[in-house]
Length: 433
Ligand SMILES: Cc1cc2nc3c(=O)[nH]c(=O)nc-3n(C[C@H](O)[C@H](O)[C@H](O)COP(=O)(O)OP(=O)(O)OC[C@H]3O[C@@H](n4cnc5c(N)ncnc54)[C@H](O)[C@@H]3O)c2cc1C
Image (cartoon, rainbow, N blue to C red):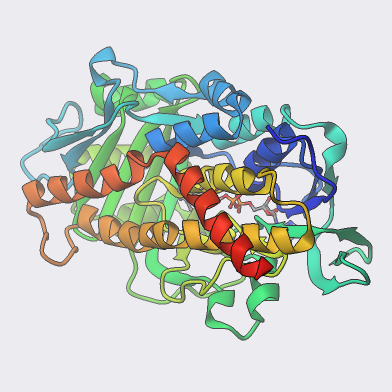
């Protein structure tokens, strides 16, 4: 553990990336402030699940993050399914006459199975790990100027400004910090539509059990089919079933400014016309008025670099991915662990050292994070029998998921941090030449 630093870090945005990073830095005695545009920390009411790499990264950031996760985490209810990530089902099975039990076509497992949390509850637990005066709300970053001396000056939309030594942008998929670093005209300044959107619902577990049977409701399932897929997993200690129903769209998303738009349950049923009874019954459990969530990512125009001087981007700001691997938030936490290892390194003291740390972060993280973005697109298509070379060959789909999941889940965060500090050595040496 470092003895503390003479520099202060400003984190822009308090989502999973910003909060886990703030906790990790604070735990290492690095002065940190969070600037969040919203009036308070908050997450949408939906589920998010984590794979083994994410859990190891939580522990690496701060044991308290892992304990927070354990307090709100829900796993598959059946003990026989504790290691099951998803049972994969043929959602388009025409031989199934009514809803209820359905055999899986294959099962994907890992060491922790499906570990899902309700986003808002998890965030609430994370907030408890931070001193209350660390966060500044209603602060929507507008631009950053290189101030006098060695300070950066952040300007906010409410007209206020604040000085800092380094800025880390964890301000999500539409990141202003990314735009500041690359300019508003750079292709990576804006995410692009993946031509998939999702209906999301949280439904009471007893209704879900009545609709699709206990095994399918209380344990995670992925219903596959042409151009659509539906995933379900229990959250809120099994009281609620999280449903996310994806559809591949033929037309452009109408408005980049708004990544959601209102829809009706009827729209979802129309998108899933011809699907088997379990998928249809799940959709009928959702509310009559729904939102459609457009799936955007940074896969078409990847960010050329995560760092510029003493500004760096992490989390969705730097590698927003479609959600098909269920790993975007986990990679945010890996980012936090690696960034904390770099900034707490005892050699990092001056502005130049911070620049070297951010350059090392970029060298260490960019390839893995950008791989995830591309792989997630591929695997989303695999669930919808659209992936080149796989189509609806379940054996091939299963083997491709296992291969890619092991790249995600087997990641050794200790080694990742060590590799990053080796990179830091190179960047410091270069800076001191
Ligand atoms: C449908 C769906 C399902 C998903 N499921 C999973 C899953 O199961 N597992 C998984 O690991 N990942 C999942 N993901 C991905 C995951 O949700 C994201 O990777 C993660 O939440 C990103 O966190 P973040 O902190 O980087 O960004 P965000 O959560 O977007 O937080 C950004 C924060 O910055 C603030 N902000 C924005 N602009 C400014 C500004 N200019 N100034 C100040 N503050 C600002 C925002 O208000 C917000 O609080 C899913 C994503 C989607 C869309």
